[in-house]
Image (cartoon, rainbow, N blue to C red):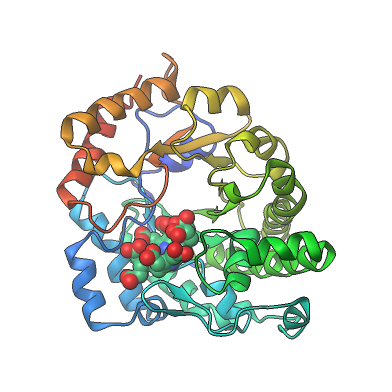
Length: 361
Ligand SMILES: O=C(O)CCc1c2[nH]c(c1CC(=O)O)Cc1[nH]c(c(CC(=O)O)c1CCC(=O)O)Cc1[nH]c(c(CC(=O)O)c1CCC(=O)O)Cc1[nH]c(c(CCC(=O)O)c1CC(=O)O)C2
């Protein structure tokens, strides 16, 4: 492994390991993106996947929020997308403007045609290169997060051919072809394992698995179809790191919308941190998971449109609910989902400032 500058701020790594921290570390999902004019300027000249595939551009965009909010963000997240995994599996994905798969999987016979063995390091080596370059450029200022999509969420894109309101195509697979569905979910998980291990080898200091559509599943279907592939990823990544003599890094699972199953996730999925959305009170989430995991979240992203008074009031409320009157512990502050394109970057700054001033109990 390459050697990197010493860390000056390891708040998020300590919180992820369940420790007490002086205040909650804070970062924001999609913090490098369309609400930032400097991102839009890069985007005006380059296709979305061109940015992902060009390490110098991915690094530049990753660093934009770190520079703009200097001293306020406690982590960088590498600029990429969850859909690079289906691309590595041989599927075509374009952004027009949202993700579109010209040849989605229609029946299990289509899944059979996907390559059984994927050379992930070759297909996604550009992400590793971007991570290594960014880690050097950060000079230890804040840790760098790597990520991938969860098998269920990627399965849904690969079958629906893009975003969906009803998820009826991918759900019909689960119910009509349960065994073939589970095989495909495991196949995706195996690509995710190699991808996360490669990102960690390249310098990612924490990794997050985005199960953005977990909440579309009934709790028992989440347990039957999504959870096994999430467990496969956490245990597979750990086993490969240990075998290679590489220190294990904290892992976050974001099972968005599956708030009735976070206790099950904390018990069985094998992650250090569980991300929660805004539809559960943090104190209830803490009661559900006990001391087994750290929690990440969970302000409603739309509060960034609600004016500064409401934002401050809600950050205070969130902090009190996460901390429960005790010292700040095992909590990573974030929104409950990604920041959206219309947000005023100065309101994002105010959110970060409010977390700094109100998250220490
Ligand atoms: O199904 C849909 O409706 C399309 C969603 C969509 C995806 N990539 C996309 C789009 C188009 C769009 O956001 O408009 C396409 C996409 N991915 C990204 C961007 C930049 C941005 O949002 O402004 C964009 C917009 C593309 C553009 O510049 O035109 C970058 C991205 N996607 C993602 C991440 C990781 C993170 O959130 O921090 C990151 C990079 C980190 C960062 O910006 O700092 C993850 C991602 N991509 C995606 C998902 C699925 C869920 C969702 O957000 O809808 C998820 C996971 C999640 O956010 O829960 C799929």
